[in-house]
Image 1 (cartoon, rainbow, N blue to C red):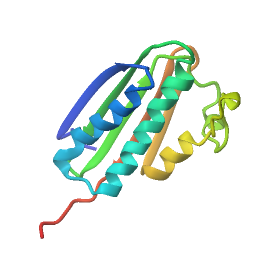
Image 2 (image 1 turned 45 degrees about the vertical axis):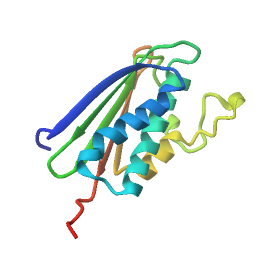
Image 3 (image 1 turned 90 degrees about the horizontal axis):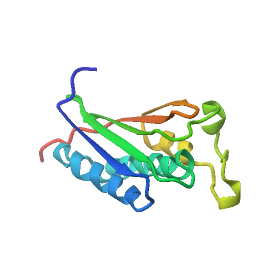
Length: 147
C-alpha cells in the first residue's frame, strides 16, 4: 500500500466513557471520504469492540493509555490501529475464538474479535504478555459516485 492521503493519532485514558469518544473521533475523521452509513457503522462498531477490549482486558482494574491511529489511503482503504500497554494476551488464537472470554463472571460474551472480523475486511492482532496488545483493523470503503 502507498502512503496515506490523510492520517490522525489520538491517545486517551482507558476509561469506559472514552469508548464513545473513539467512535466519534473515527466517524468525524472519516467524513472527508464520505463513507456509506452502513460502512461507517461497521467501522465504529469494530473500533468500539477494540477499545472496549483495551479497557476491560488490557488494563483490568487500572487506567492506562489507549492509542488510536487512523490512516486513509488513495484507494479509500481505512486502516485503524488501536493499542494498549496493558497485560497482553497469552494466547491470541484462543482469545479470537467466539465465546472465549477471560471475564465470564462479568457477563462478557466473548464476541469482541468475532464482531471485529465480521465488520472489517482484515484484522490483525499482535500482543506480548506484560507489554500490551495492538489490533489493526482494515476496511476498503466504497467510492461514492456523483448523481
